[in-house]
Length: 200
Image 1 (tube, rainbow, N blue to C red):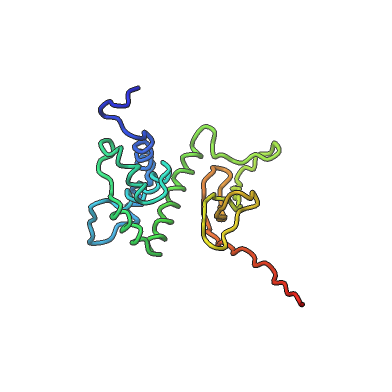
Image 2: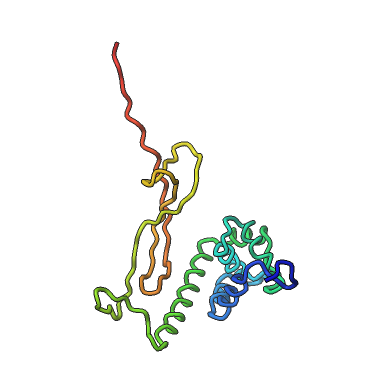
């Protein structure tokens, strides 16, 4: 392995995930959902949304980090959106656009489930205590700790005592492992200690 060879990319995952989104139909579906009549953008909005997700998969924590994670693969993937373009795409995601994205994801999920059903092993039904729950979709709703750090007033560590966190509610499908929905919850303020009075 050489670190100075020509034609190398930072992460093989970027073009592979991009290709997967194209071949499975997710990118075309999102592009159609986010298209605006009479407006031709320099970067396909569906692809920009896919690229933002890829950046997060590659470990990015900001829009600038996403564009940085993608930049090392551009001679394979082609030009990617800049940070300002990606921000504009996020600003365009009003409720109507989000609804269209949800519909596109539902169509894509239906197509993938159809392919799973057609394979030799069939759709992945859940097995509990040796019994296969054929025809049942098992949905798991649970809070999930997302570790973070905060110096804000009133921030309190978790029950683990040494980390701070967010605790969104995550809805997953046990059959396929898909994350169906995430509901962010407000961080509760630290409890106020009781006031004590003394007399002299």
